[in-house]
Image (cartoon, rainbow, N blue to C red; front, side, top):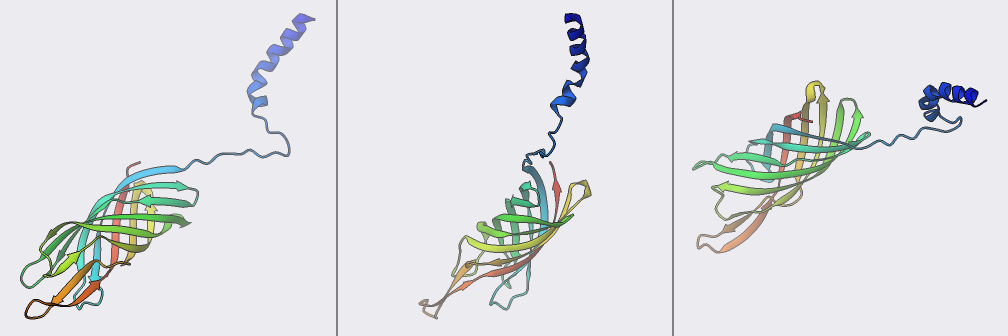
Length: 199
């Protein structure tokens, strides 16, 4: 009898993995979906202008990186960027380097398109020439954009940015140097870029 039981047990051994993974009727298998992290590089062109000033649009170049965390159709992205701007002037060109940090909420509309929106913090880290009486401060902008995530880890995108707070304050004086007016200026921008997902 013992030999029969042993033989029966040996016959069941190969079936144990299948038995262990078998689903009980009427129950569902719960799979935990973990967030996906990705990192990459990006570069682009930024066309912007001061509001309320009769100046042509100004071009700027940006380079930097990004970090993404995604779960399903939702995501969150942060992008440390350097923005190189040259503002033409009759006497000399004014050059600025800004550090920009957008933090964006993302939603996948349909593959491969994602819509992005959120705030951007900006601060001038280098200024080569400024308007007389101008004071440049860190400022906050709002962003809305669309990004295509293509094969071979390539990203293409376009964004619209508008400053919520003043980019710089201009102090106006009379002929004797006495202050007569202080005016704050904001900016609007259109941005296009390309990126590459490293992992």
